[in-house]
Length: 343
Image 1 (cartoon, rainbow, N blue to C red):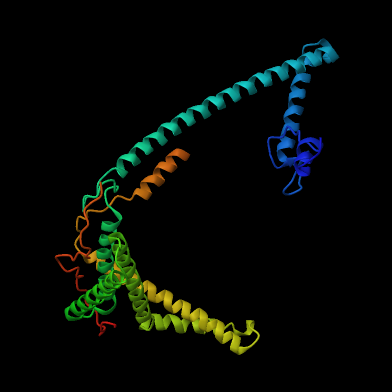
Image 2 (image 1 turned 135 degrees about the vertical axis):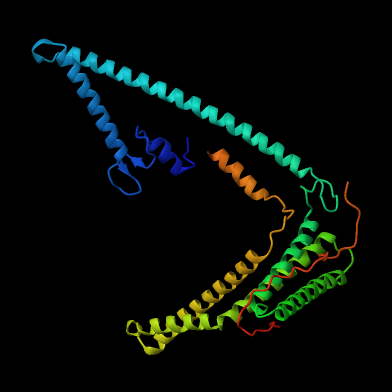
């Protein structure tokens, strides 16, 4: 019969691996990954040696004078082997029973999770009533996310340019809300003007993506503003001086300056980011707690389930980004800095 797979023939017929070692990395007593002696094989050798020693002890103590009879020793050794084999069979049976029990529990948990997931997917949207939307359709989720992004942008603007006084705070809120609404409305207008047949879900998604981009740009401007404040400047100078004291480690003074400048700029912007986050935490901690109708985190619930296992369409309507009835203004925190709202 011709050999069509030489590698498979070599592994399966010509060079079969018949090792009794439980370690799959073992090849005749040597590890294939490290080429060192296999510790599992050594343990098997020690176990067999201990078994023969027990059989020898029993065979010699049963006879007078401590003499050894070959047939008695072989019978005792065979009895020890039979006992070990029986215990191993019991252990394998117990392990199989435990494995089957775990598999049954896993199957029950998977079925329970599938039923819960099916029930969740069958829920209608609690905002627009669209059936089979898992409690909230993508369009309403994107519209809600736009409002959350607007509130986050207002927090960033107030934390950066509105901490000096109430007038600065109100101006930051007004400018940020106006600019973000304008960017979102412009993106929706451009998408609707691109052609007919635009899905409402696409319009809501475009609004959310635009709001995310605007918030990202606002955060970058805020970090850049904090990067040139006294604390960040002091961090920049300290790191630059520290790096320049090690200029002898570089080939030239220009190379040392480049390395020091890069490290100092990194330290400056890390400090700026920390200052921004500290301001945001201050604002949010001073704000009264409001009971929010938070959407359940289905990803976290599914992750918990996985960890436990290891151990008709709604009618068309005009798309608009809903405005909150009250301003998401942040409380005033006094500061001695005179700042203005960045454009």
